[in-house]
Image 1 (cartoon, rainbow, N blue to C red):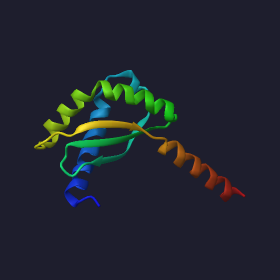
Image 2: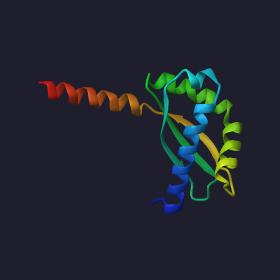
Image 3: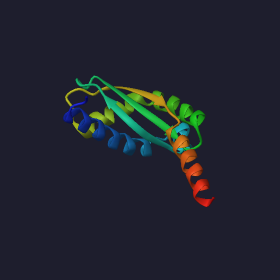
Length: 115
């Protein structure tokens, strides 16, 4: 079970990553409607796994992941400057289809409501 401090750090990193993603100029990131679904941080803040989802589906999320991997150095530097952490975690980006999945469930529920 994650401690309070690590979950707070995960939320802080998620908030700052959202802000940083809006500033990036890479067309693989800008042209896709991507969202940070979840951030998992290790207890010692050495590793951070970021789950990314796109409105257009898993393929667009994977395309955005390639852009994020190329900008990892810039993102780590910005997180370090904004959060003043003792150790900046190594970032790992993973594509997920959470938004597409939830949109599909919402569509199914609305179709049941109409019947």
